Length: 388
Image (cartoon, rainbow, N blue to C red):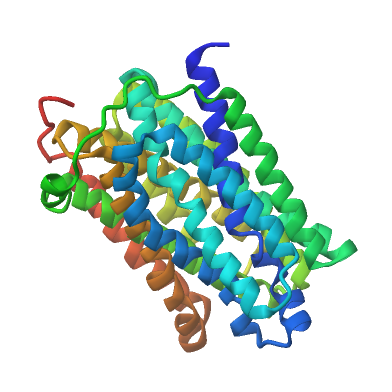
């Protein structure tokens, strides 16, 4: 098996594991609310605590990887997060579960912080964008697997078995990564502090951080309010039927992979604005009170989002390297902005829904998509660094 294929399969599996574990409680919120006697709003803390732990830890794991290396951190992250997932299934109480989810978020940070930096170091430039796209495709599939697997198992055996099942999926993926991912050959340890300012001042990197935050904010805003939209008039779907909308996620796997191949051929600068346009078109198609049209719109929005995120996340370490910025540090800053966009911008969708319904949610998301599109267009005029 070629090195490129081994790396691609391994990081695809790593992406599946990371996001399956991260979103494993999202489909279980009603069960957790009933089991622990907490309100629906508090039950969502099981997801928020993991996301907070992940976001904060990213600021540490990226710089840490510049000293200890990429592959040791990837292996430790996947194994530890899977084991904590098993512990979550046996949590004796609500606060114990929240503490374990926070710890799991911290453990999960080791993979996303270094994956794209590893790809930049270990693969030829002509393969980097498509490999990054395949990795992001794995995260899209993982997000769907985590939600659907936990919901399906919980309906038959309860939430504890559901969390255990997702943890086992994570550990199986960790085994694949251990078997397939080659050790770093081109990693060179380096110091961080002197480079931090450049990671925060390069105009292209700042644009990419903002694109990650805004595109994720738009995506999460739509999906956070989607359940309310589908279970209300005129659709009136059941909660189970509304949850099936996550089956659209494989579109993101396909789009990020295709976008990576196109970027290797035509350049990220040319392809990213198209992803923003695709996201905007999908967003507009969710406006009519027509379920088939809305599903098509969600598919286009999902495909466009993962196209943009896949290209931006893979572009960050490449630009960072060309500017003599530690790739792991820049990748961590991008992902911190990405998850901040999810938490801050995405949370605004509840107020938008309450104040103006779906039209207000679409308007909110449209603002973020527009900002992403403007920045993506501006990146076409940012000078290419000589070392790139």
